[in-house]
Image (cartoon, rainbow, N blue to C red):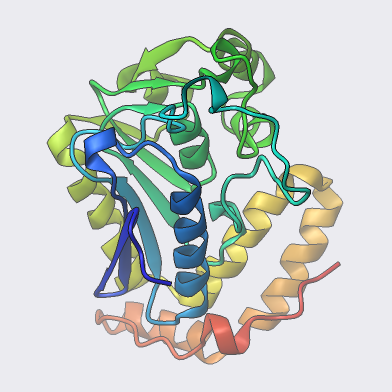
Amino acid sequence: MSYEDIRLELEDGVAVIELHRPEKRNAFSGRMGEELGDAYRRCDADDAVRVIVLTGAGSAFCAGADLGGGAATFESPEDPHFSAAAVDPPAFALRKPVIAALNGHAIGLGLTLALQCDLRLVAREAKLGIVQVRRGVMPDAYAHWTLPRLVGVARAADLLLTGRTFDGEEAAALGIASRALPAPEVLPAALEIARDIARNTAPLSVAVAKRLLWESGTLTAPEVERKETALHRVLMGSPDAVEGVMAYLEKRAPRWSLSVSRDWPEWPR
C-alpha cells in the first residue's frame, strides 16, 4: 500500500509512524485508518522492527474524526462490516511495543487511538479529550476497555460521560500518560525509550510479556501464574536466556538470536 495520510520510517529497530495530514491537524480519515492498520501489520511481521512510535505531523497529534463532511460526518454506516475499532489491528494486539508521542492536541478518536498504545508521552500544553458524547455519538476504538484499565472506572466515567477536555499535566496525573513534557521534547523522549528497548531487551521476551500484560485484565491470578509458567518454559534455557546473563556479566551489548516471527510460541490456554 502506498501511504498518503501517514508516513512510515525505520531506523535502528525503531519504526516511526506519523499521522500526516498537518493541514487538518491530522484529522482521522478512513484512508488514515486503513493505512495505519497496514503499517501496523507490516511492522508486526518485520523482525527488523523492535518498537513502534506513533506521532503526528506538525503541532497536533490528531484532532479526531475529520468533520469535513458536516452534517453527514456521522451518517449511519451502510457497510455491513463497519467497526467502531477504527484501526485493524489495534496497537495492543501487536507483538511489538507501541509508544504514542502525543506532540500536541489529541481529541476524540485521536486520544482513543493513543489509548491502544502501550506507553504514552504527552505535551504539557496539549488539549485532550474523549469528546464523542458532545458530538452526538459515543467513544470508540475500544475506549470503554482501554481507559478503565489505565485510570479505573470512576475516572473513566468522568472522561467518557462528560466529554470534557483537559491538558497534558492532568493526563499524567490521571495515569493516561507516563510523562508530560514540553511539546518539542515529546518525540525525542519517546524515541529515547524506543531505542533503549530496541538495544537492550530481548525481542521475544518483550513480545510475550506485552501479550500477557494486555490479556491479564480478563484473567484470574491463578490463570496468570499458569500462563507465566508455560511461557517461562519457552524462554528459560533458550539462547536468549543465556545471552542476557552473559552480556550483563561481560558488560557488553546483548546479541539476541530468537525471533518474534520465527519463534513465537503456541499461546497457553
